[in-house]
Figure 1 (tube, one colour):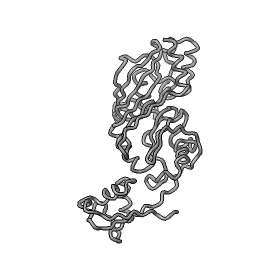
Figure 2 (tube, one colour):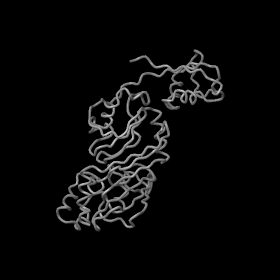
Figure 3 (cartoon, one colour):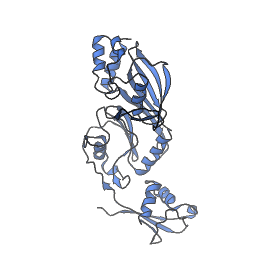
Figure 4 (cartoon, one colour):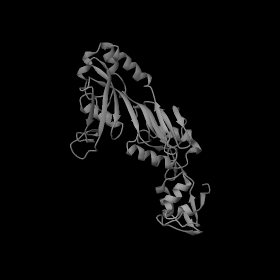
Length: 324
């Protein structure tokens, strides 16, 4: 393993009264306060040459602090050279357009070939280490067969700040979906706590107790008569997966959804045979993360990206709308 990097910081008059972990994190600028605190507790910090393990101690002006940063350990997932559609990248983060069919994290059944494997290969040494491990920081997830925009942190500080931004919902996220039927009203809010389906633990459902609060706003953009609709969804809370749960709950499941579309929808009878077969045979949930906007976690600059739906989604959309 390479020698640990060491930051030597001489506290100036402006440091007076500050907490040690907060002060060092601000001066170093690339790691979070919680990570600095953990390193101090591990004995990685010296005050005028003497180890200090009190992360909350008050900084004294004129004192020399040294913080040793262990080299980031190799990430457990192995790097794999896989195609990525990257729209933006800098030292702190990257924005990519995830293809449908790509799993985000390695897991049983998908140990490799994932987005994380591809990102480790793509980013290489630009990953400075998150939690002491050289890996990308997945801020939010998309299901395997959901396409569209994702932001990935490359540093611990960026991950911490982006996670806080997402938790505070200080972001713009818009999704496009093709669903069965025509939601009524055409614009509305679906609210329902989400938890494990008591009848099928492999999927989620709107539940009456022990669920997590979730709300999804939707608006019908176009319709294929009463058979199907193109809708825009914005998350008020929670994760992308809740769109699938909420739309199924109100009787308008996503076209192609292998989990929440349990029977042949009655609305399919309203389509011409060729288009009906195309919709019934669509091999994935018709959901695409189209818009993503937020403030850059380091610079504060406004970032906003849009992604047109992939070709399979567009072909289905065009065929359905031709029936309108």
